Amino acid sequence: MRITGVESQVVSLPFGMGGPPPSFAGKAWTHLDILLVRVATDEGLVGWGEAFGHAGIQATRAALDGIVAPLVLGRGAGDIAGLTREVLHAVHLLGRNGPFVFAFSGVEIALWDLAGKRSGQPLAGLLGGGARGDLPAYASLLAYGDPALVRRNVEAACAAGYRYVKLHEVTREAVAAGAAAAREAGARLMVDVNCAWSVPAARRMAEAFAPHGLLWLEEPVWPPEDAHGLARVRGCGIPVAAGENTAGLHGFRALVEAGALDVAQPSVTKIGGIGEMLRVMTLCEAHGVEVAPHSPYCGPGFLATLHLASARVERPLVEVLWLDMEANPFDPWVRAGNGRVRLPPGPGLGCEPDPAVLDRYRVGPVVRTT
Ligand SMILES: [Mg+2]
Image (cartoon, rainbow, N blue to C red; front, side, top):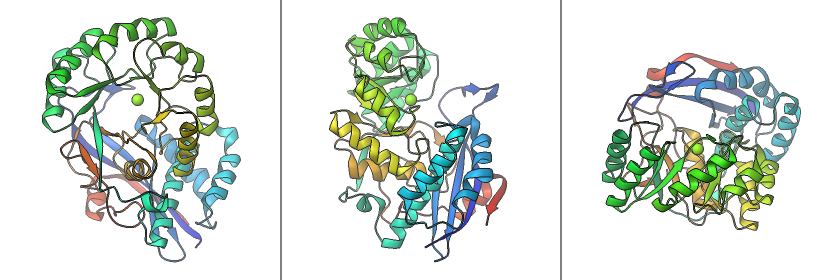
């Protein structure tokens, strides 16, 4: 089975989040943009992947269309490990953590989708997992800044059935408001501060948050590769989670060996795809570090995370963005119900995108490399 074509396209899905949208680089964040990768083969099968984009989606797309797609064209679709080694070596001088690795992640996920389709198995089964029909999820709230809005949205997430809620807030007031709402609903709270603090500031804030009984404090330290700094925040009363900005197996090895992590958060659309996730998961198993994959996305990367978590995480907890999308080509599988997410039952990732939804929400052209 050879790769005969790689297509990229972006869909832009309007969403609401129960408050004013945050802004990034001067733009209000009102649409969820997904960079979709479609890999076609000479056997007629196609696979779907997702490459991390966020505000940098056009940079990832340029890396995909200009470099990564030509590198994989004509290659065998089944030797995923060999292709990973070859492509990541070819682009390593362009960055070990950034658009080129994100772009390859999208291709790699599509190759696993193809492998599942070719064998007639769901990806979770291909990875050696059993048939878990659904998994517990947590609501990952965007940043509100306003304690009243934080409280209102934690209450709404709990009313929707979530038993776990994560905030993206950095102030004591906002976290206290979220913690009070979670406590009243009998839910557990996590806090993600996206690398906001120096190590001494992170230690002070962790000690201040400790009475709230958080499940974890995520990325408390700037920069994210300060493994020894993260290790110093452990022991301040809250388990430490990190890893969404960590480059590959060896980046995680540095964190684990420094004693930096209670919870590892590898990200399938960023780290190089499913194979690298498996290598990181094995490393974490060997060192007694829990894994809660980073998955604030809503396409094939999310579906891949469901299969990985189902097959390889003993106590999975799946990150689901707390936002209300107008539509999604992978509905209904990218949404939670009563605090749980279901695995689509088909082979590979388990479902195909709805072409009408792709057409309706696509922005820009479909770029084909053939
Ligand atoms: Mg995070």
